[in-house]
Image (cartoon, rainbow, N blue to C red; front, side):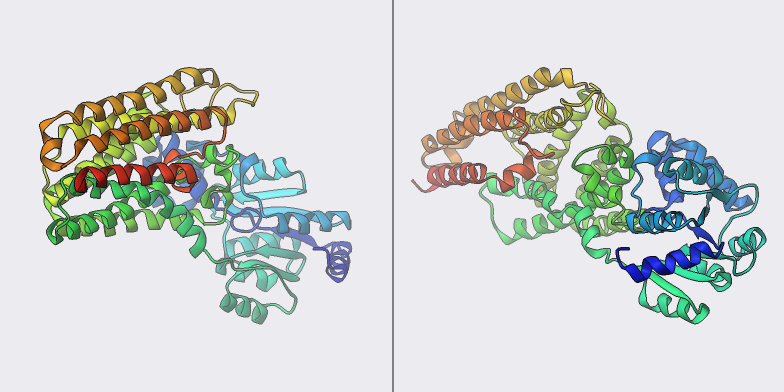
Length: 487
Protein backbone atom coordinates (compact mmCIF):
# COMPACT_ATOMS: atom_id res chain seq x y z
CA UNK A 1 0.00 0.00 0.00
CA UNK A 2 3.05 2.32 0.15
CA UNK A 3 3.65 2.13 -3.61
CA UNK A 4 2.82 5.53 -5.14
CA UNK A 5 1.61 4.02 -8.40
CA UNK A 6 -0.81 1.78 -6.52
CA UNK A 7 -2.14 4.79 -4.63
CA UNK A 8 -2.56 6.74 -7.87
CA UNK A 9 -4.52 3.84 -9.35
CA UNK A 10 -6.77 3.81 -6.29
CA UNK A 11 -7.25 7.57 -6.60
CA UNK A 12 -8.26 7.36 -10.27
CA UNK A 13 -10.86 4.67 -9.56
CA UNK A 14 -12.18 6.37 -6.42
CA UNK A 15 -12.73 9.64 -8.30
CA UNK A 16 -14.63 7.82 -11.07
CA UNK A 17 -17.62 7.29 -8.75
CA UNK A 18 -17.06 3.55 -8.62
CA UNK A 19 -18.20 1.89 -5.39
CA UNK A 20 -15.56 -0.14 -3.57
CA UNK A 21 -17.31 -3.35 -2.49
CA UNK A 22 -15.51 -5.52 0.07
CA UNK A 23 -16.29 -9.06 1.12
CA UNK A 24 -16.17 -9.95 4.83
CA UNK A 25 -15.21 -13.60 5.35
CA UNK A 26 -11.62 -14.37 4.40
CA UNK A 27 -11.20 -10.86 3.00
CA UNK A 28 -11.80 -8.11 5.54
CA UNK A 29 -11.31 -10.62 8.36
CA UNK A 30 -8.97 -13.60 8.45
CA UNK A 31 -11.85 -15.79 9.53
CA UNK A 32 -15.38 -16.81 8.58
CA UNK A 33 -18.44 -15.55 10.45
CA UNK A 34 -20.31 -18.80 9.80
CA UNK A 35 -17.70 -20.75 11.78
CA UNK A 36 -17.26 -17.91 14.26
CA UNK A 37 -20.95 -18.08 15.15
CA UNK A 38 -20.95 -21.89 15.08
CA UNK A 39 -18.16 -22.20 17.64
CA UNK A 40 -19.44 -19.28 19.72
CA UNK A 41 -22.81 -21.05 19.91
CA UNK A 42 -21.16 -24.37 20.83
CA UNK A 43 -19.10 -22.66 23.51
CA UNK A 44 -22.05 -20.78 25.02
CA UNK A 45 -24.82 -23.35 24.67
CA UNK A 46 -24.20 -26.43 22.55
CA UNK A 47 -27.93 -27.17 22.36
CA UNK A 48 -28.52 -23.94 20.44
CA UNK A 49 -26.73 -25.40 17.42
CA UNK A 50 -29.35 -28.13 16.92
CA UNK A 51 -32.12 -25.74 15.72
CA UNK A 52 -29.62 -24.09 13.37
CA UNK A 53 -28.72 -27.45 11.82
CA UNK A 54 -32.39 -28.31 11.41
CA UNK A 55 -33.00 -24.90 9.79
CA UNK A 56 -30.52 -25.86 7.07
CA UNK A 57 -33.41 -27.75 5.44
CA UNK A 58 -34.86 -24.34 4.51
CA UNK A 59 -31.54 -23.02 3.20
CA UNK A 60 -28.35 -21.45 4.51
CA UNK A 61 -29.89 -18.06 5.26
CA UNK A 62 -32.14 -19.25 8.14
CA UNK A 63 -29.26 -21.30 9.56
CA UNK A 64 -26.95 -18.27 9.53
CA UNK A 65 -29.55 -16.14 11.28
CA UNK A 66 -30.00 -18.72 14.07
CA UNK A 67 -26.26 -19.16 14.55
CA UNK A 68 -25.77 -15.39 14.64
CA UNK A 69 -28.23 -15.19 17.52
CA UNK A 70 -26.99 -18.35 19.25
CA UNK A 71 -23.65 -17.16 20.54
CA UNK A 72 -22.10 -13.68 20.96
CA UNK A 73 -19.12 -12.91 18.70
CA UNK A 74 -16.79 -10.18 19.94
CA UNK A 75 -16.51 -7.98 16.84
CA UNK A 76 -13.74 -5.82 18.31
CA UNK A 77 -11.30 -8.72 18.68
CA UNK A 78 -11.86 -10.31 15.25
CA UNK A 79 -8.64 -10.85 13.24
CA UNK A 80 -8.96 -8.06 10.68
CA UNK A 81 -6.81 -8.12 7.54
CA UNK A 82 -4.79 -4.92 7.86
CA UNK A 83 -3.78 -4.95 4.18
CA UNK A 84 -7.44 -4.81 3.17
CA UNK A 85 -8.25 -2.22 5.84
CA UNK A 86 -5.46 0.02 4.51
CA UNK A 87 -6.74 -0.39 0.95
CA UNK A 88 -10.22 0.74 2.07
CA UNK A 89 -8.80 3.67 4.02
CA UNK A 90 -6.77 4.84 1.01
CA UNK A 91 -9.87 4.59 -1.16
CA UNK A 92 -11.80 6.81 1.24
CA UNK A 93 -8.92 9.30 1.44
CA UNK A 94 -9.32 9.75 -2.30
CA UNK A 95 -13.00 10.56 -1.88
CA UNK A 96 -14.38 7.16 -2.87
CA UNK A 97 -17.39 5.43 -1.36
CA UNK A 98 -17.26 1.93 0.18
CA UNK A 99 -19.65 -0.92 0.95
CA UNK A 100 -19.30 -4.11 2.98
CA UNK A 101 -21.25 -6.88 1.24
CA UNK A 102 -21.11 -10.45 2.54
CA UNK A 103 -22.90 -13.78 2.59
CA UNK A 104 -22.79 -13.59 6.38
CA UNK A 105 -25.93 -12.62 8.24
CA UNK A 106 -26.74 -8.95 7.71
CA UNK A 107 -26.91 -8.23 11.45
CA UNK A 108 -23.27 -9.30 11.84
CA UNK A 109 -22.19 -7.48 8.68
CA UNK A 110 -23.66 -4.20 9.96
CA UNK A 111 -22.05 -4.71 13.37
CA UNK A 112 -18.63 -5.07 11.71
CA UNK A 113 -19.25 -2.02 9.52
CA UNK A 114 -20.33 0.06 12.54
CA UNK A 115 -17.27 -1.02 14.49
CA UNK A 116 -14.75 -0.05 11.79
CA UNK A 117 -16.52 3.10 10.65
CA UNK A 118 -15.01 2.96 7.14
CA UNK A 119 -18.07 1.86 5.16
CA UNK A 120 -20.90 3.89 3.71
CA UNK A 121 -23.15 0.87 3.24
CA UNK A 122 -23.44 -2.69 4.59
CA UNK A 123 -25.42 -5.57 3.09
CA UNK A 124 -25.61 -9.23 4.09
CA UNK A 125 -27.69 -12.36 3.93
CA UNK A 126 -31.25 -11.91 5.12
CA UNK A 127 -34.61 -13.56 4.55
CA UNK A 128 -34.28 -16.56 2.26
CA UNK A 129 -31.49 -15.14 0.09
CA UNK A 130 -27.91 -16.30 0.68
CA UNK A 131 -25.84 -13.40 -0.66
CA UNK A 132 -23.10 -15.42 -2.31
CA UNK A 133 -21.79 -16.06 -5.83
CA UNK A 134 -24.33 -15.30 -8.56
CA UNK A 135 -26.82 -13.93 -6.01
CA UNK A 136 -24.24 -11.42 -4.77
CA UNK A 137 -23.35 -10.42 -8.37
CA UNK A 138 -27.03 -9.81 -9.16
CA UNK A 139 -27.50 -7.70 -6.01
CA UNK A 140 -24.41 -5.58 -6.75
CA UNK A 141 -25.45 -5.09 -10.39
CA UNK A 142 -28.86 -3.90 -9.16
CA UNK A 143 -27.35 -1.56 -6.56
CA UNK A 144 -24.43 -0.04 -8.48
CA UNK A 145 -24.86 -1.15 -12.07
CA UNK A 146 -22.81 -3.69 -13.98
CA UNK A 147 -19.23 -2.46 -14.05
CA UNK A 148 -20.06 0.21 -11.50
CA UNK A 149 -17.99 -1.17 -8.67
CA UNK A 150 -14.60 -2.56 -7.68
CA UNK A 151 -14.84 -5.83 -5.80
CA UNK A 152 -12.45 -7.21 -3.18
CA UNK A 153 -12.88 -10.95 -2.55
CA UNK A 154 -11.08 -14.15 -1.69
CA UNK A 155 -12.80 -17.28 -3.06
CA UNK A 156 -13.96 -19.15 -6.15
CA UNK A 157 -17.54 -18.11 -5.36
CA UNK A 158 -16.50 -14.53 -6.14
CA UNK A 159 -15.72 -15.30 -9.80
CA UNK A 160 -19.29 -14.36 -10.76
CA UNK A 161 -18.85 -11.00 -9.03
CA UNK A 162 -15.41 -10.27 -10.47
CA UNK A 163 -16.82 -10.97 -13.93
CA UNK A 164 -19.15 -7.96 -13.62
CA UNK A 165 -16.80 -5.69 -11.64
CA UNK A 166 -14.77 -2.81 -13.09
CA UNK A 167 -11.73 -4.14 -11.23
CA UNK A 168 -11.07 -7.46 -9.48
CA UNK A 169 -9.09 -7.18 -6.25
CA UNK A 170 -8.10 -10.54 -4.77
CA UNK A 171 -6.96 -11.55 -1.29
CA UNK A 172 -5.04 -14.77 -0.56
CA UNK A 173 -5.95 -16.73 -3.70
CA UNK A 174 -4.04 -19.85 -4.82
CA UNK A 175 -2.14 -19.51 -8.10
CA UNK A 176 -4.66 -21.52 -10.15
CA UNK A 177 -7.57 -19.35 -9.04
CA UNK A 178 -5.55 -16.20 -9.66
CA UNK A 179 -5.17 -17.28 -13.28
CA UNK A 180 -8.93 -17.82 -13.59
CA UNK A 181 -9.62 -14.35 -12.22
CA UNK A 182 -7.20 -12.83 -14.73
CA UNK A 183 -9.08 -14.61 -17.51
CA UNK A 184 -12.42 -13.24 -16.28
CA UNK A 185 -11.34 -9.63 -15.70
CA UNK A 186 -9.15 -7.21 -17.65
CA UNK A 187 -8.20 -5.24 -14.53
CA UNK A 188 -6.90 -7.35 -11.65
CA UNK A 189 -5.00 -6.44 -8.49
CA UNK A 190 -3.69 -9.16 -6.15
CA UNK A 191 -3.34 -7.70 -2.65
CA UNK A 192 -1.81 -10.80 -1.06
CA UNK A 193 -0.78 -14.38 -1.81
CA UNK A 194 -2.27 -17.57 -0.43
CA UNK A 195 -0.58 -18.28 2.93
CA UNK A 196 0.62 -21.72 3.93
CA UNK A 197 -1.49 -23.34 6.62
CA UNK A 198 0.88 -26.22 7.44
CA UNK A 199 2.99 -24.36 10.01
CA UNK A 200 -0.04 -22.81 11.80
CA UNK A 201 -1.76 -26.22 11.88
CA UNK A 202 1.31 -27.86 13.41
CA UNK A 203 1.53 -25.05 15.95
CA UNK A 204 -2.17 -25.44 16.81
CA UNK A 205 -1.60 -29.17 17.41
CA UNK A 206 0.95 -28.13 20.06
CA UNK A 207 3.65 -30.77 19.61
CA UNK A 208 5.50 -29.28 22.59
CA UNK A 209 2.57 -30.44 24.74
CA UNK A 210 3.26 -34.03 23.69
CA UNK A 211 5.90 -34.03 26.42
CA UNK A 212 3.04 -34.73 28.85
CA UNK A 213 2.25 -37.93 26.99
CA UNK A 214 5.67 -39.34 27.92
CA UNK A 215 3.94 -40.21 31.19
CA UNK A 216 2.65 -43.38 29.49
CA UNK A 217 6.23 -44.70 29.79
CA UNK A 218 6.36 -44.10 33.54
CA UNK A 219 4.76 -47.43 34.62
CA UNK A 220 7.30 -49.54 32.74
CA UNK A 221 10.18 -47.38 33.98
CA UNK A 222 8.94 -47.57 37.58
CA UNK A 223 8.65 -51.35 37.25
CA UNK A 224 12.11 -51.55 35.61
CA UNK A 225 10.57 -53.46 32.71
CA UNK A 226 12.06 -52.25 29.41
CA UNK A 227 11.39 -55.35 27.36
CA UNK A 228 10.09 -55.14 23.76
CA UNK A 229 6.75 -56.47 24.98
CA UNK A 230 6.23 -53.28 27.02
CA UNK A 231 8.11 -50.68 24.97
CA UNK A 232 6.23 -51.29 21.70
CA UNK A 233 2.69 -50.94 23.12
CA UNK A 234 3.86 -47.95 25.15
CA UNK A 235 5.08 -46.28 21.95
CA UNK A 236 1.73 -46.94 20.24
CA UNK A 237 -0.02 -45.53 23.30
CA UNK A 238 2.15 -42.42 23.10
CA UNK A 239 1.23 -41.84 19.43
CA UNK A 240 -2.47 -42.42 20.13
CA UNK A 241 -2.36 -39.97 23.01
CA UNK A 242 -0.59 -37.33 20.89
CA UNK A 243 -3.20 -37.52 18.13
CA UNK A 244 -6.20 -37.48 20.45
CA UNK A 245 -4.68 -34.82 22.70
CA UNK A 246 -4.03 -32.60 19.66
CA UNK A 247 -7.65 -32.99 18.58
CA UNK A 248 -8.66 -31.81 22.04
CA UNK A 249 -6.24 -28.85 21.91
CA UNK A 250 -7.77 -27.78 18.59
CA UNK A 251 -11.29 -28.23 19.96
CA UNK A 252 -10.45 -26.20 23.06
CA UNK A 253 -9.01 -23.37 20.93
CA UNK A 254 -12.12 -23.30 18.76
CA UNK A 255 -14.38 -23.13 21.80
CA UNK A 256 -12.19 -20.56 23.54
CA UNK A 257 -11.76 -18.05 20.70
CA UNK A 258 -13.19 -15.08 22.56
CA UNK A 259 -11.15 -15.67 25.73
CA UNK A 260 -7.97 -16.32 23.75
CA UNK A 261 -8.34 -13.07 21.79
CA UNK A 262 -8.65 -11.18 25.07
CA UNK A 263 -5.45 -12.78 26.41
CA UNK A 264 -2.09 -11.00 25.83
CA UNK A 265 -0.31 -14.18 24.65
CA UNK A 266 -3.07 -16.57 23.61
CA UNK A 267 -4.42 -14.09 21.03
CA UNK A 268 -1.46 -15.11 18.84
CA UNK A 269 -2.68 -18.70 18.60
CA UNK A 270 -3.44 -19.81 15.01
CA UNK A 271 -7.25 -19.81 15.26
CA UNK A 272 -7.49 -16.67 17.38
CA UNK A 273 -5.13 -14.70 15.12
CA UNK A 274 -6.70 -15.91 11.87
CA UNK A 275 -3.51 -17.64 10.71
CA UNK A 276 -5.47 -20.91 10.46
CA UNK A 277 -9.05 -21.01 9.09
CA UNK A 278 -11.72 -22.20 11.51
CA UNK A 279 -13.00 -24.48 8.73
CA UNK A 280 -9.74 -26.41 8.89
CA UNK A 281 -10.14 -26.98 12.60
CA UNK A 282 -13.71 -28.15 12.13
CA UNK A 283 -12.43 -30.91 9.82
CA UNK A 284 -9.09 -31.74 11.48
CA UNK A 285 -10.52 -32.26 14.99
CA UNK A 286 -12.55 -35.39 14.09
CA UNK A 287 -9.77 -36.55 11.74
CA UNK A 288 -7.14 -36.62 14.50
CA UNK A 289 -9.59 -38.22 16.90
CA UNK A 290 -10.36 -41.01 14.44
CA UNK A 291 -6.67 -41.69 13.74
CA UNK A 292 -5.90 -41.87 17.46
CA UNK A 293 -8.86 -44.19 18.07
CA UNK A 294 -7.69 -46.60 15.34
CA UNK A 295 -4.25 -46.87 16.97
CA UNK A 296 -5.85 -47.33 20.39
CA UNK A 297 -7.95 -50.22 19.07
CA UNK A 298 -4.77 -51.88 17.76
CA UNK A 299 -3.45 -52.02 21.35
CA UNK A 300 -6.48 -53.33 23.24
CA UNK A 301 -10.11 -52.68 24.04
CA UNK A 302 -9.13 -51.76 27.58
CA UNK A 303 -6.71 -49.09 26.39
CA UNK A 304 -9.38 -47.79 23.98
CA UNK A 305 -11.72 -47.47 26.95
CA UNK A 306 -9.14 -45.38 28.81
CA UNK A 307 -8.72 -43.15 25.75
CA UNK A 308 -12.48 -42.72 25.45
CA UNK A 309 -12.52 -41.68 29.09
CA UNK A 310 -9.68 -39.22 28.42
CA UNK A 311 -11.49 -37.68 25.46
CA UNK A 312 -14.77 -37.49 27.37
CA UNK A 313 -13.18 -35.71 30.34
CA UNK A 314 -11.17 -33.32 28.17
CA UNK A 315 -14.24 -32.50 26.07
CA UNK A 316 -16.27 -31.93 29.22
CA UNK A 317 -13.40 -29.75 30.44
CA UNK A 318 -13.50 -27.67 27.23
CA UNK A 319 -17.26 -27.16 27.42
CA UNK A 320 -17.85 -26.83 31.15
CA UNK A 321 -15.25 -27.91 33.72
CA UNK A 322 -12.70 -25.19 32.91
CA UNK A 323 -15.25 -22.59 33.97
CA UNK A 324 -15.80 -24.16 37.41
CA UNK A 325 -13.89 -23.08 40.49
CA UNK A 326 -11.25 -25.63 41.67
CA UNK A 327 -13.02 -28.37 39.68
CA UNK A 328 -10.91 -27.34 36.69
CA UNK A 329 -7.69 -27.87 38.67
CA UNK A 330 -8.85 -31.31 39.82
CA UNK A 331 -9.75 -32.22 36.24
CA UNK A 332 -6.31 -31.21 34.93
CA UNK A 333 -4.58 -33.21 37.67
CA UNK A 334 -6.77 -36.21 36.87
CA UNK A 335 -5.92 -36.00 33.17
CA UNK A 336 -2.20 -36.13 33.94
CA UNK A 337 -2.73 -39.20 36.12
CA UNK A 338 -4.91 -40.77 33.45
CA UNK A 339 -1.88 -40.82 31.16
CA UNK A 340 -0.03 -42.96 33.69
CA UNK A 341 -3.04 -45.26 33.99
CA UNK A 342 -3.14 -45.54 30.19
CA UNK A 343 0.52 -46.56 30.16
CA UNK A 344 -0.16 -49.27 32.71
CA UNK A 345 -3.16 -50.58 30.75
CA UNK A 346 -1.27 -50.54 27.44
CA UNK A 347 1.72 -52.44 28.87
CA UNK A 348 -0.36 -54.57 31.29
CA UNK A 349 1.82 -53.46 34.19
CA UNK A 350 0.08 -53.26 37.56
CA UNK A 351 0.22 -49.72 38.89
CA UNK A 352 1.49 -48.93 42.38
CA UNK A 353 -0.80 -47.08 44.75
CA UNK A 354 2.21 -44.98 45.70
CA UNK A 355 2.72 -43.90 42.09
CA UNK A 356 -0.92 -42.91 41.66
CA UNK A 357 -1.00 -41.01 44.96
CA UNK A 358 2.20 -39.13 44.13
CA UNK A 359 0.95 -38.23 40.64
CA UNK A 360 -2.38 -36.87 41.87
CA UNK A 361 -0.80 -34.49 44.40
CA UNK A 362 2.12 -33.54 42.15
CA UNK A 363 -0.04 -32.76 39.12
CA UNK A 364 -2.61 -30.94 41.23
CA UNK A 365 0.27 -28.67 42.18
CA UNK A 366 1.18 -28.07 38.51
CA UNK A 367 -2.45 -27.43 37.58
CA UNK A 368 -2.76 -24.88 40.40
CA UNK A 369 0.43 -23.18 39.12
CA UNK A 370 -1.18 -22.96 35.69
CA UNK A 371 -4.17 -21.09 37.13
CA UNK A 372 -1.88 -18.99 39.30
CA UNK A 373 0.05 -17.92 36.18
CA UNK A 374 -3.17 -16.79 34.50
CA UNK A 375 -4.19 -14.80 37.57
CA UNK A 376 -0.79 -13.10 37.78
CA UNK A 377 -0.91 -12.13 34.08
CA UNK A 378 -4.28 -10.43 34.68
CA UNK A 379 -3.46 -8.84 38.02
CA UNK A 380 -2.61 -5.45 36.51
CA UNK A 381 -5.89 -5.08 34.60
CA UNK A 382 -8.98 -3.13 35.57
CA UNK A 383 -11.21 -6.20 35.92
CA UNK A 384 -10.65 -8.71 38.70
CA UNK A 385 -12.33 -11.53 36.75
CA UNK A 386 -10.59 -13.85 34.29
CA UNK A 387 -12.31 -14.38 30.94
CA UNK A 388 -13.61 -17.94 30.64
CA UNK A 389 -12.64 -18.83 34.22
CA UNK A 390 -14.39 -18.71 37.60
CA UNK A 391 -11.49 -16.98 39.33
CA UNK A 392 -10.68 -13.46 40.45
CA UNK A 393 -7.25 -11.91 40.75
CA UNK A 394 -7.84 -11.69 44.50
CA UNK A 395 -7.77 -15.50 44.57
CA UNK A 396 -4.02 -15.56 43.82
CA UNK A 397 -2.82 -16.21 47.40
CA UNK A 398 -5.19 -19.16 47.84
CA UNK A 399 -4.31 -20.70 44.47
CA UNK A 400 -0.60 -20.29 45.24
CA UNK A 401 -1.11 -22.01 48.61
CA UNK A 402 -2.83 -24.91 46.84
CA UNK A 403 0.14 -25.25 44.49
CA UNK A 404 2.70 -25.23 47.31
CA UNK A 405 0.86 -27.48 49.76
CA UNK A 406 -0.10 -30.09 47.17
CA UNK A 407 3.45 -30.14 45.82
CA UNK A 408 4.88 -30.68 49.30
CA UNK A 409 2.37 -33.47 49.99
CA UNK A 410 3.57 -35.23 46.82
CA UNK A 411 7.12 -35.09 48.20
CA UNK A 412 5.87 -36.56 51.48
CA UNK A 413 4.21 -39.41 49.57
CA UNK A 414 7.54 -40.02 47.83
CA UNK A 415 9.32 -40.11 51.21
CA UNK A 416 6.82 -42.64 52.60
CA UNK A 417 7.23 -44.77 49.48
CA UNK A 418 11.00 -44.91 50.02
CA UNK A 419 10.39 -46.81 53.28
CA UNK A 420 8.09 -49.38 51.68
CA UNK A 421 9.09 -53.02 50.96
CA UNK A 422 8.59 -52.47 47.20
CA UNK A 423 11.56 -50.07 47.10
CA UNK A 424 13.88 -52.57 48.72
CA UNK A 425 12.89 -55.12 46.07
CA UNK A 426 13.50 -52.78 43.12
CA UNK A 427 16.56 -50.81 44.31
CA UNK A 428 19.86 -52.10 45.64
CA UNK A 429 20.61 -48.80 47.40
CA UNK A 430 17.30 -47.05 48.31
CA UNK A 431 19.14 -44.35 50.25
CA UNK A 432 20.12 -42.64 46.97
CA UNK A 433 16.44 -41.96 46.25
CA UNK A 434 16.21 -39.49 49.14
CA UNK A 435 18.04 -37.05 46.89
CA UNK A 436 14.95 -37.02 44.67
CA UNK A 437 12.86 -35.65 47.54
CA UNK A 438 15.34 -32.83 48.14
CA UNK A 439 15.41 -31.87 44.44
CA UNK A 440 11.60 -31.94 44.21
CA UNK A 441 11.27 -29.67 47.27
CA UNK A 442 13.60 -27.16 45.64
CA UNK A 443 11.97 -27.41 42.20
CA UNK A 444 8.37 -27.01 43.42
CA UNK A 445 9.29 -24.06 45.65
CA UNK A 446 11.16 -22.35 42.81
CA UNK A 447 8.34 -22.93 40.31
CA UNK A 448 5.79 -21.34 42.62
CA UNK A 449 8.08 -18.35 43.18
CA UNK A 450 8.60 -17.94 39.43
CA UNK A 451 4.84 -18.07 38.89
CA UNK A 452 4.29 -15.53 41.66
CA UNK A 453 6.70 -13.11 39.96
CA UNK A 454 4.93 -13.42 36.60
CA UNK A 455 7.73 -15.24 34.78
CA UNK A 456 5.80 -18.44 34.23
CA UNK A 457 4.63 -19.68 30.83
CA UNK A 458 0.91 -20.44 30.53
CA UNK A 459 1.77 -24.10 31.12
CA UNK A 460 4.33 -25.09 33.82
CA UNK A 461 5.24 -28.29 31.93
CA UNK A 462 6.20 -26.31 28.82
CA UNK A 463 8.11 -23.81 30.95
CA UNK A 464 10.03 -26.58 32.70
CA UNK A 465 10.97 -28.18 29.38
CA UNK A 466 12.67 -24.91 28.34
CA UNK A 467 14.06 -23.86 31.73
CA UNK A 468 17.74 -24.67 32.23
CA UNK A 469 17.54 -25.09 36.00
CA UNK A 470 14.50 -27.36 35.69
CA UNK A 471 16.39 -29.52 33.20
CA UNK A 472 19.29 -29.77 35.66
CA UNK A 473 16.82 -30.85 38.35
CA UNK A 474 15.39 -33.55 36.09
CA UNK A 475 18.90 -34.76 35.33
CA UNK A 476 19.67 -34.98 39.05
CA UNK A 477 16.45 -36.92 39.70
CA UNK A 478 17.40 -39.36 36.96
CA UNK A 479 20.92 -39.68 38.37
CA UNK A 480 19.59 -40.44 41.89
CA UNK A 481 17.20 -43.02 40.46
CA UNK A 482 19.98 -44.75 38.52
CA UNK A 483 22.23 -44.56 41.57
CA UNK A 484 19.64 -46.39 43.62
CA UNK A 485 19.75 -49.24 41.09
CA UNK A 486 23.46 -49.63 40.33
CA UNK A 487 25.11 -48.70 43.64
